[in-house]
Image (cartoon, rainbow, N blue to C red; front, side, top):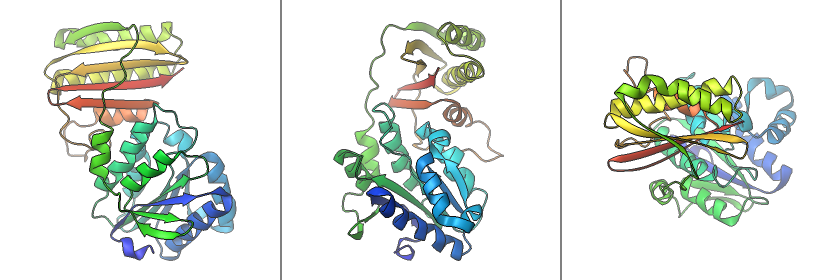
Length: 306
């Protein structure tokens, strides 16, 4: 079942209950260990504890990652979890990654689906496997339908099957929707002349709206990176909007740039590449990043929980 998917494998595991979960995940992990492959597990904490217990004395051979923390922002999963682990190893690598669970919000979900679609581009041609579990007992049918569109194969209770719905490019197009309009906002237009003052402005504003350090510093840095990108790559100017939601602060930057690379902000550039690190840093700092672009106009929105 695994070998048929080489060189790159990205199956979804449809499971119901702990037994089906472990029956799908543990043999996948043990097979990798038996082949001498580096193995990592990035899943919500409850499932992480289940896997650790089931692996018994082999658990110390597996990198165990709490996805609720490391993957809080779906845009950070590729650079900070999957690519970070895969980049440590030259040969085959095996990962279990569970980015979608019942506790994900409606605001987070589009970014989760985009992440699942982009995995196929990020690892195309590499000898690597990423198994993504989906709880069919708690997730709605539309989520499972999206999983069939972002994964070339599905492993379900009745056995594995090739997904006739597999269409990651179509998924990205379907989820490329305008962001919901914000409520009343603080707005500042900027160009190079105002760039230097925006970081301090964002920090003071965030403090007034309940964001404490060190997250306040992270918010200000994310705003500085986005506005700098606008000046450098987005037509030399932009609009910064700030507003507060329930237990969070939100910043949004709009400029005249066009995102030509779908993996922008998801794949760290090489050490010899100049630039390209700002969006990766923003994804690592924020609790959620949403982006919408059309030719000649890009909006990036960052959420920070108070």
